[in-house]
Length: 492
Figure 1 (tube, one colour):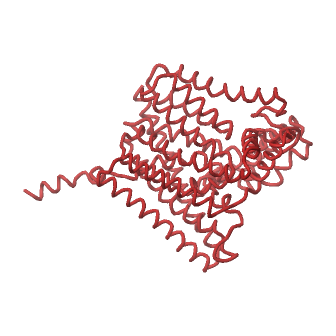
Figure 2 (figure 1 turned 135 degrees about the vertical axis):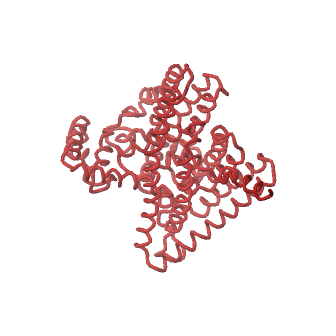
């Protein structure tokens, strides 16, 4: 059995090296393309501003590192990081008071109607009726709007609290993964300063709510796998995953990753029982909440089955001309056929089949490689764009999001290099199968996003995986194992 697991780990390592190399090259390429589109003056401003922000974070990181070297209490250092996390996020939303726009504005407006008792936003061909997976987010907005006089600020403050909790949970996940408190502290610092984790607190998106429940589920799952918690905690893990899924319905990908990991990498004979408990605990809240909403006549459609079939997202994802992103041609299919669910489903299937069959194989492969790179090479996962809108500094032509984007690309590129280096540490995966779970989750989302419509924002929900995979506190003796031997020889 161990032989099979080792073969799987070695096999998985090869494509991962290729995928992360593509991400690194893509990150460099996207940054270069942005430089070309800027004037020389704005390019200089972007570089200087990005480097200043980066150096400030680097100095803070060095300060944390020195505290570790001097033997300060881990609890004290972690408290400093958590306070810094909260302060950075609060400062960001106060300085950059951006209003929701685009899809988020529509969802927020629907929340306002729900607060007034208007349930029509969930029915017929309304936006939420078409995309019913946004129902719980809309209700959440509506409840806050009904209670608080300044709901947008309250939503952002809740985002900050949850984001700070994420840093804390990531610390404990790191402890379980590596059993190294120094490494866990540095990982929590990276999570504290990771640009998307800061930017998205200003965005009224479902990911801010779902992420905390997802990583909480991961933490409990690891505790059960390591035998520190009993099987009842696997139920708690499934419940947390389901709650997160109610806000951002991609939890099924993590559920499948759990089961796949249990089958391939876990030696415990209770794998089947654990898998069943996970599935039941995941589905129960989902089905229960859906039934309650339908019975109260709040919604018209199931949470997983809106008026517009999910295949329309797959249709957009196969459009080579738009690089698999949103495009007007595909988005109007439902309207064209008067939102007839079966007809739209049938037409989309025919178009998808035609595109896949008629496109030359080399062009199809090239398209999906480019689509993968575009999905994962944006260092801020579009957080700078969504959190700043039309805000600007210095002058009207100089967009704040440009500075934040270049800073994010710099941080992300360094982060990816750290992750890439760890892929060459094969012994790490053979000795510690838990790390394989993170790569399985990433691969699951990678495949899922190759199928559906491509948006950099979609990757934000699992960006914490990249933070957890790097070694930001390397042991120099491990890197240079012969130093001690050389010194002994020199003495002789």
